[in-house]
Image (cartoon, rainbow, N blue to C red):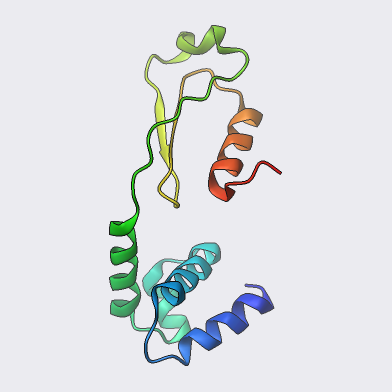
Length: 120
């Protein structure tokens, strides 16, 4: 965890009430940490009930975006490996459907853009 994240976490832990923005910040720090939520809460002294309630509330507020098809170069061999597409649901609620025979580098670029919302 970076020093900036530690400082932000300390400020959040000092609050008796979290706004939606506070909760999003806490959950973002937790997700970047890679720990199970209950372990993260225990380690940093946060009520698991509080964190899971906010996680559930914020997940309910995520609107499922429309499906956007992305055609990548080299689609000629797509159906030779496996006939079924793979659907990837990102933490931000976006969904990506990957056809068989996808190119690893292209998929990585698409995932990066979809998660950050930035092409640059």
